[in-house]
Amino acid sequence: MKSDGLYHLTLLDGQARALLIDSTRMVETARAIHGLSRTATAALGRHLTACAMLGAMLKNDGSVTATVKGGGPLGTLLAVSKPDGSVKGYVENPDVELPRVNGKLAVGDAVGRHGRLTIIKDLGFGEPYMGQVNLVSGELAEDYAMYFTASEQVPSLVALGVLTQDSVISAAGLIVQMLPGASDDALSRVEGIAPNLKGISQTMDGVDLDEGVSRLLGPLSPQVIGKLDTRYECDCSRDRVERALISMGEDELVSLIEEQGCAEVGCQFCGKIRQFTGEQLTQLLEKAR
Image (cartoon, rainbow, N blue to C red; front, top):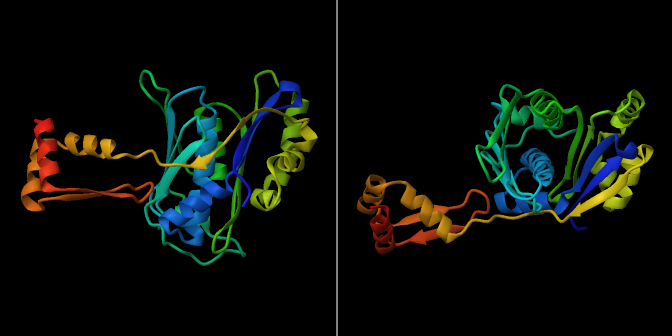
């Protein structure tokens, strides 16, 4: 399986910008960790891919948390990314599988169309920024495009795709955004490539990012201005879990010790389980006090 990665690009002599990501390994890692069905793989894979690109747009520090609640059988989809290229996520009901629609995985039906996409950007200082839009289709690419246009006032083309069988064959994403002062001709040329972006996972299957740039953005004079290694990575730790237990408060910890005598805490992102004995919980209780 080829390596993941992300390119920052400038288009049309600086009149537009783009991010192109190969997220195949990232999505396959998520599929394996969470035991995802094919439909869940496609849905969470698109969500992780988009969130990774949002994280790559941050300058130096912080994180992006993207949540989709569409009312469909998959339940909530959540992804968290950082500007270093790492992303993690989960879907509430990972084993949901629906019949295909016109030969394609029924992502929109599984996600649902009656809910919202919420983006929280924590820049590492001050209050986090939150943007929220109603879902358009539940297919996610159109929903992210609506987020950029309505919440950030940046007209954007968004393509997301996951090609999967028993494992992930190809996963990729592309965001193209017009920059202030762009000409009408530049806008028309960007709109002209929109039909070529459908089936982006098939387009990127078996090719590297350089070839992907040529295939998807060739008519727009693309220039690579930055590269980023991307990956699925959970940064959970025992210390974080301990802090979370302490934050439950004295009463909750006392109840936990009295009723269960121990605790087993699992991470939703990586599945790792951490055990706490009664003695260890008592030590955390002392800290809580």
